[in-house]
Image 1 (cartoon, rainbow, N blue to C red):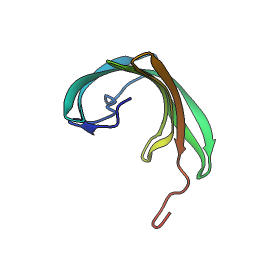
Image 2: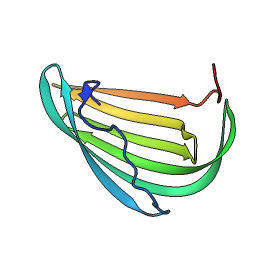
Image 3: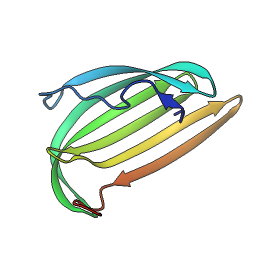
Image 4: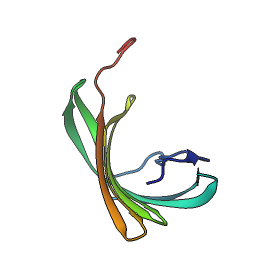
Length: 116
């Protein structure tokens, strides 16, 4: 995934989605002066409970795939009502010439409240 400037929201989820619903977003990305289109497909997979450093939360689990000209990323996003992202994982492959690079990162909520 490119780390350029997003010209639109990086993640969009329609209101009132239910388990099994899918949606697609298209985002214009500018990186090193080059504009490209990032196409993402998402599915609300399930409602579940997840434990992270900040505690245990009832969440919805969203799976997504982001396609750009030289990269693909698989996302898993856990969203808690009234809080937002609780956990976000990305597994990506980027191809430059003959070389493919695999990347993985994970971010989770560590606290809620002022100063945390």
